[in-house]
Image: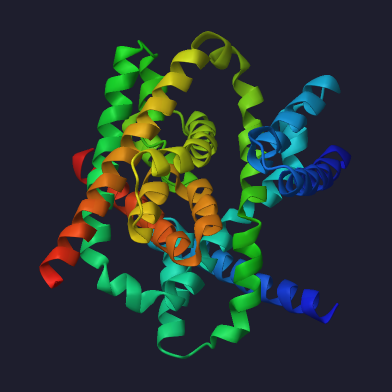
Length: 222
Length: 123
């Protein structure tokens, strides 16, 4: 109980520190999604705390992902006319991107000789956590491993996303949003909102669409 | 102070919707998460003007601005898989890094191409 409450507040505290550091010096190490978990892992291992004890408090923060997902309704509403105008562009590229995500995960995993169970856990890694865990369970992966892999994907995606955008010269705001939301779910969307409000909204739509498409296809196939 | 009370109350609204939607999903026994249904519901309520934007705008902005915070506890879960990460961590990293780059290139380039073609056909 004490561990849980402490874990809850230390997480917020370290997150606020990371945010301030990142604002002061925007380098990868200070990115809140890297700095905070790494600092927490060291702290938990260093004090011989069980993850379960930490997570007794941490899970309440994780629960807030659900209301936050609902909150995407607000930017969706604000940008709806623009989204409607670009609906076909978004739907086509997100659907194609989701197919590429599933196929590339499976092929790369086979190529790298990753364990079968890990491979199935990797397949839904680019979609938002709750649905990814759902899909993982349906296809024979381990949902809790998937949750971690989804997070790594989000972290990596929000780091390499801006480089890929500039390398491939993606100048269209809609395309940038599609790229980040389809590949790196909520973390990518958070990065997309740094680029702009429209890019962020398109990214959140892409994230939701990618999750729905992947879930739908899995339900039909499995 | 007033501003924070407003944010807390509005955040509470989203929490309540998420609780209700989870109950609904369990009751209907469907595979779609309650939060996705909740998002469509709130969007619908806004579109119908049954709730006004200013009633929930501050709470939504707060939740979305601090989104990364909510990802942190599950990502710390990696310590439960120390063995896996020690043995297959490198391969997993390669799969995720290359896979993510491929998805980005595919979806981004396709979306950009469609945008350009549209522009072209309009002019």
